[in-house]
Length: 424
Ligand code: GDP
Ligand code: IMO
Ligand code: MG
Image 1 (tube, helix red, strand yellow):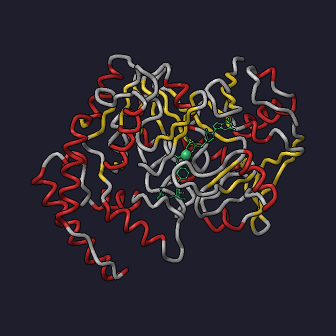
Image 2 (cartoon, rainbow, N blue to C red):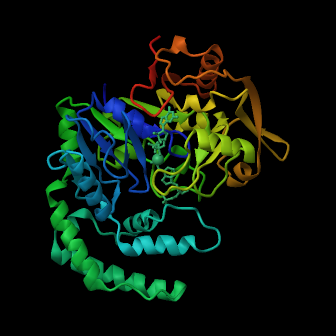
Image 3 (cartoon, helix red, strand yellow):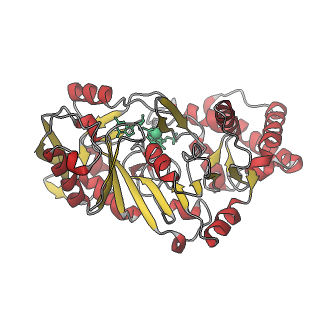
């Protein structure tokens, strides 16, 4: 395995966690490059389920060094609780997990700003983890970085100025009573002391590893259509979830990346607000949500479900430069008689074959579907592609053709061994 980016090719929750865990067996480093604890990546080992929010999903493998890169926004409380969870399972993070000293830190005022904004009309449906406001501070150049938590003087100055500014605007806009400096300063200094042993210059760590021919897996969070630039703006997250984010979010140059793998569900889901052309109507929505256990791994919110959208998928293959696809959750479609795939959008009498960046079109379009016969057989125990029912193989072949990328793996269950590796 070479240096590979794994990216969600829809609206997140494609099953990246499972695939990253499997690929991590052969990786030396597994690196998160963007997002924060808005992510929820599920890994199932036998019957035990782990949900990772910040720590890379390769952490269950003995050898893998896990890195939280500069592009991630870090809630230290969430990080420490994940480290404690791992410790309770006999996995020691010290010497195994590293956090970039350049990563930005999420503070309580970010979470409050996120929640208050969400209480207004026109909400995004965020995870309310403070992700957007933290990235906004980063871009406004008033953010506080992990290295600042290790420097009481720097933290004091920066936190004082941030709290003063935030309190004024929160009071003016929301009549919010305000934050007091002392408590937050003390709390975050303590976090600094606790996370110090994990903090390092991860840009050098990863680049030195690459120079020594170590294998690096870059773990994308969220998904392509949630990308701040390429997603369904403004219903997106605040980072570059696409493959390009792996470079800026780690300090690794594009020429060092060998491969991009896109993960897609055999259908589509999204959590939160925003356009979703292929969204199911009520009865099918319930059926697939139940069968696919489509509830958010971070917030527990019911996920919206719909047919596979090849217009969106093809766009994802393009903007990420996807070399290979992994199709997950094929088993969830096992008992459907007919299965639809969107191959175009219609809006105001015009046919769109390519994903439109105009949100009015995506909001208002009617998908153009092709309909396929289902396979009506259980696929959860199939080990080889040739063991899949003919119509399931036809479905995979059709996705490949429509998206213009090779499907290298098909997943038919949440466990490690429920994976078909395609060798042809
Ligand atoms: P991620 O955010 O992309 O890592 O995905 P999530 O963990 O949020 O959601 C994927 C869910 O689907 C998790 O509960 C996984 O355990 C589960 N899952 C992954 N692959 C499969 C599969 O092939 N079939 C089924 N039925 N469940 C799967
Ligand atoms: P993983 O990595 C699915 C969605 C939220 C909301 C929007 C903005 O598990 O695939 P934010 O809190 O990021 O400001 O919310 O993005 N969202 C996700 N949806 N999977 C995720 O992560 C998500 N992370 C954020 O629901 O619509
Ligand atoms: Mg998830």
